[in-house]
Length: 205
Image 1 (cartoon, rainbow, N blue to C red):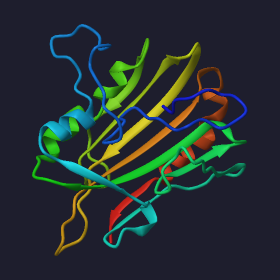
Image 2 (cartoon, rainbow, N blue to C red; image 1 turned 135 degrees about the vertical axis):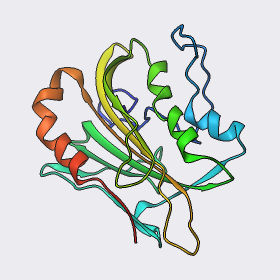
Image 3 (cartoon, one colour; image 1 turned 180 degrees about the vertical axis):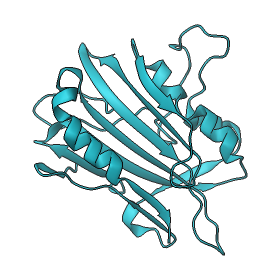
């Protein structure tokens, strides 16, 4: 789910949901009864704004991912300093963790219905599985599939979580974890990817 070329420099980590970071359209959406609505667009249309914050800086929420052996942190001027990104060898596979502090009145159950919409906008997206089951008690959506990017077939796993921090603030957040690999290497990278997925923590303090 991370966009960018697999060249000398590690990919810039785009994700299924370019949440609150770029303007998306549904022009490339497949013809369906109801076209997908990018999550960022849905939030903005409902008056919800977001500020990206570092996962490790939250006073009321624990958000983290493990770093498998052979993986290491990746930074780039093109990636916000609040983003946690790790990669293996400086290129695919990659894992990207972002957190947004949300401001505005919204129904998490309605927002999460659009959590997987962005995936449908990728070129030749083929869904493998998806879920809207809660994650650690918080509203969540997950989708996994493959798509084409600049002639390269990628395999991505993406989860959105809408947690609420501890009282009295009860601050709402949007947490997104996106893991991307080359499609033809997905099976070989599965143990590391599953370790990140199963070690993904989102919990109120």
